[in-house]
Length: 217
Ligand SMILES: [Zn+2]
Ligand SMILES: [Zn+2]
Image (tube, rainbow, N blue to C red):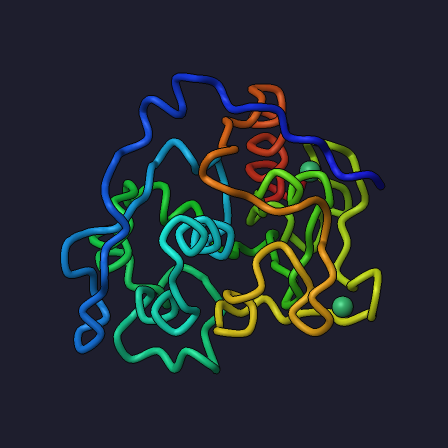
């Protein structure tokens, strides 16, 4: 499937982008010494924590090790964690990313009796082309992207590798591409200068499907 071409972002997105410098980290604490460059408008509904951290990495040129430590001080960055509710330190992430806690909770896997999640990273190529991966894509009973109706994929088209859905250095340091062979999952990835909000129809379709999955619909 051809990648979706990205047009220029709306001018208001560029104007509203905060003009913070890209700042150094206090490596001893692995927390920002002064602050990070990030904008909540870059995040779309039900965007997964991995997708959020990829954008954060792109905007701030951070290592996967630093990103993993943002989820909790005692997390082994190479082992990583399954990004689900109750495992990730939401207060710590809120402090670093400046995103609302509700957005961060929504970004985590929240299994219910009827809603189970795949242990393998699954993606829609058209969403990935816009730098978006969703917790909705991880729901085991959802086989097509609710926004684009593309079949969700887990295996790399080039080497067949299926990445475990774990927020670890390996996944965090290979945004929008296979962490084995580095082939793109679709498109050229995301950059802050090309950020643009998701269409309203796509937002509704994702929300409807996600809520429905908890009800067994
Ligand atoms: Zn999609
Ligand atoms: Zn591959």
